[in-house]
Length: 409
Image 1 (cartoon, rainbow, N blue to C red):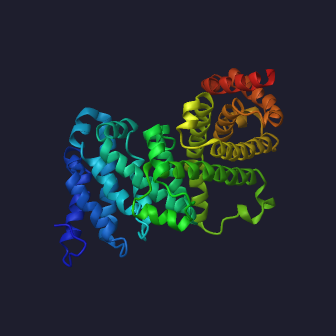
Image 2 (tube, rainbow, N blue to C red):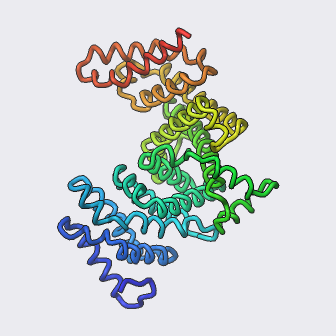
Image 3 (cartoon, one colour):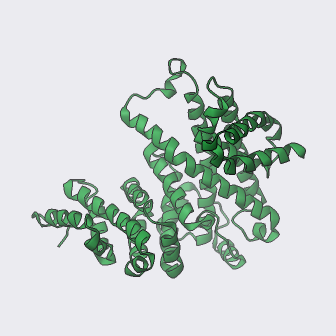
């Protein structure tokens, strides 16, 4: 039997066998058994302090199980959904419960395990399980939000901060906008207001109340959404500064662009390749939320935020998009900013697209954004002239249309 207190070699041998099983598609699906996987997860949680070979092996088996589900779902989604009907609610509950505990010392490690694992799960798979298990899903989703609030409210190592954004982004892709901005009923708002103390809680009491799960679902949702939007905007400004620094020749850069270790360089690479795209998705969902609120009086009255809260979100977004605009202006004025180069720059294309969406809803940056149009027009002309680049026109032409529409206003 797999046990963290096993003083023999049995646990080690069992885990080696499970690793071998995970390599064979014909039998690997047995690892998705919720009871078996719960034992593995418990072993991982119990062995964080020692982090020996058995801990690493158990972690590997757990992550591979999520990959097995991913591969199996591609082949036969209906069968995999049926076989693993208890897997997601059970495992996510087992992982999220200690994750939301205030006294949990290994919160960053649990976060990393969940982030690496959830990344494998197909969107439709998660959505189906959440739909079929609403009660269990509500519990682990609230647990995740509570744990993330604790991490986002305190200073963390860069890797933990990045893992937080990645988990938020991965779940946004799988759960949709409701993950960050859930629809809240008037009944829930009234219940939360009547149950909440009149005195504003301190950060310490806020975390303590989360420890006992005394915060209502609405309070958790409000705090989570507010933190996610604000910190995503801060993160975006930092990322844009780093990208702008990359435009400077290496011998002219400040120390902030020089890495002293390979780990730091890899961390920076991860931020630009994985965290940046996810922050763009969070920003786009935030824009959609503001639009929804502005178009519906009920959304404001019964939603997450009052008018003051909405204004704070808008101000945070304005700062983030001003940073994106500044980076784009620096990029297009850099030495190597030909239409050919810009058409190959995914950050340029993604930044233009998300900025154009924001400019359609907010006019505070219209004047400064005018200088982006001529280079964009040149990129569109270049893509039209090259058969290998014509596929980009589906992305670029709507962006250009938005800028032209703004210029007509």
